[in-house]
Length: 250
Image (cartoon, rainbow, N blue to C red; front, top):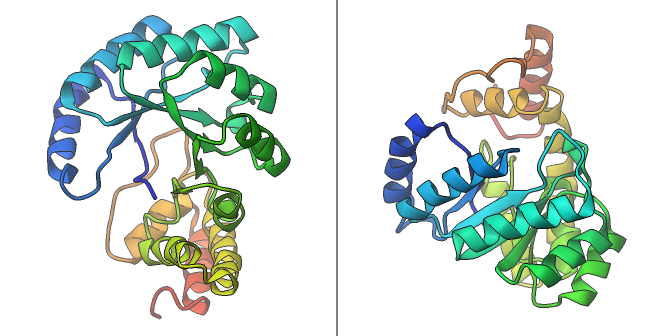
């Protein structure tokens, strides 16, 4: 299981990143950082800065929102991988509008030997099996809380989770149950996590998760615009649903 990656920060944010890395270094190694820059020039600048700070794994998604051809994607990912010099996690995130097909993922892995991990958010299990058949050494992380069970049984090693933020015990439990071979209990937990995920997603991409964290006593603030904070009706639904699921008290 891996911590949720830290995302690209403006230049003034690197001091904060250094504080975070120093704090978690001996608690949750390895530390990953996701570089989400469309400009390869800017992305290289970010990679150089985080390399100095001591990030263990660099996560690279496909550039977005513009569509790029095969050569452009290969150049982007492999250039950043070489620039970092350490272990890299390829992040296939179709929601950004540039899904990577299984054949494209295989081409990237063939050309970029620094990629040791794949965070897969494609929801394409047949495609994932295709990738793993070509690269069985790849360490796959589930990119969706709804497919932890399926991806780990397919050979994955863990999950990059959103649900883990308000309810870490759920994600730790399912990963441990799978690792221990308790598959019936793990499947039950997966079904429960899907219900929790559906509730939290009612609040948008991050708003529902942020609100849930405030309900468990950790206020991380509201989403940055244009992401929306859930309205009062949605907050009431989330709160009542989490009470009925036994995750928070009345």
